[in-house]
Length: 354
Image (tube, rainbow, N blue to C red; front, top):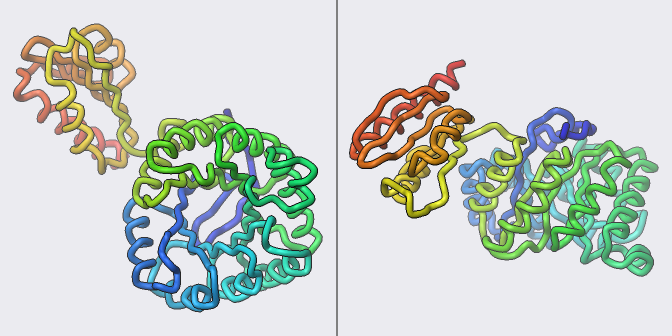
């Protein structure tokens, strides 16, 4: 489906919404006041391909650390604020975006002050609705439901708009797939603002990969989502890796190698498992959007090769290298993998030149 057209905003130098690429975010888990440790985590995230980073601002020391931290990093910085609105007033002078949780930031007067400050410094606000911390009036009326999340978002959007503020992005996060998808789908036709999509409290790597792939994959295929985070307990680089894979396999980001390999069965004519591991490792840094297939026998190899930029079809102690559906060469098993990887690198170089 075509991506929903949304209002474009800027978080630092990263455009969010409109026709901008879908950006990947993450969050440090250090105490922000520990500038050295926080910078180290941000550097790791940037190296992994993160576009925007968020840090917790829990007390005055965290807020005071933002100015020095900002000097040390180049990623756009989002200040995450809960409960203590005065920390937002301090952070907005330095950060590239303020995230507030409507369920705990306090009354209208506090929101008004934050909106005024963000307007003055020209930075956006993320209305970060969480199912587990809805405002009392919405929790009592709707419970922790998609409807309750949407009503909270609409109320706070209207509040900011009434204060003359429209530099907004929105998130509607629950800890399960069903409510997350339902909330985003319900709100999307009602507003023009960009969406930050994600499943909150998604758990460890295994559980988060499944939840996030289901929820974010569905939303992206619906055309919903302008920036995203895959939340994984205690992970940094894996958040970025999984998020970029979801973007790639949903067709929203054309970057990197997509590998097709057959399920293992008794017809395999080579050590396919080892071959696929080598291919994945050797090609992991290629940015060109290539599709390759590594097939262990002739059953589906030629069919998959027709739709791949390059393919291997293993046979009995030999195999074929196929380029865009045409046989390039036939080689012995001990030579074919190295030649294949050279051909993939050549194809990637040619694509980048174009």
